[in-house]
Length: 414
Image (cartoon, rainbow, N blue to C red; front, side):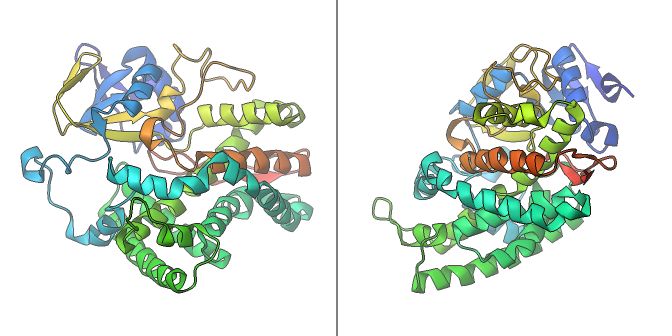
């Protein structure tokens, strides 16, 4: 089945029909994105009932355009915009999201981000390099002699959740539980989510929040050298974070701090093995490693879409939007724009054609990008160096979700 056969396109109206539940799509969305670039780079997605942009220049500009924002109810009511009332069975999830960095606009976003940004700047994150390397080696020590492993559970899952837990101040033994909460929580962001997904996410949010309330109480009484203590005890312009703000911020940092990186490690290993290129060349030095990681991020992004509300009447690419209209920005497709990247479906670590948009742009640029990049730049070279002859031991299993893109299983042997 070809990518174009998955799409029904009305070229004049720029309307597209595409089923996100079709395995042929979510297993290899890049082929569909290539078809969209050729046929309808800006399109109205009938099933999702809104407009989407795939062009690099449009996505990059809209991520930075202050006429669009992550929230809308700070300037208009639900009644004005025809937005339905919150679902009663997602009240705990909604409460946990109320002060999420991902969902706020200035001035609240600026205040919250200022309180945590210092911990994630590159010079601070760089100090974690020895810890990440040591953890990577420890994990490989456990399975190296086996000659085979399922990489997500033995390696990719463990590194990001351990490092973000250490940074925030959550006990490492909570790692497996954090993963369970996170996996349930983030299904709320998926297309075609079910009511069962909503109930599971709400329960995860309730349990996650209850646990964090206990941790916050401990750190109030006995501060430590960790990010949670820093957020509790640091003021910004005479203000401290409320407990609700602390919970929302801790949850988004824990989820975003590992969920996407887990996918990216798996996606990157698969991309490298599929390419047939020599790991010794790909990771020959720091510059080669950085280019390899960035190309993996470009061609195998873990998060595919971010959405924005129009905050005022505005026209983009000939499409008029009214205040409250939602638009979708397909980051992963922008990374494959042939107007920006030559031969965009090819894995070419040597390319130097501009930055990928996998971490977004503008005021909502991923706060954890320096940490994620550092983890990838350390964990990937160590894996291939320690396990020469690494190869796929079975067909990788892609998660049956959109718009996150990652693997359920990655069986390897050496």
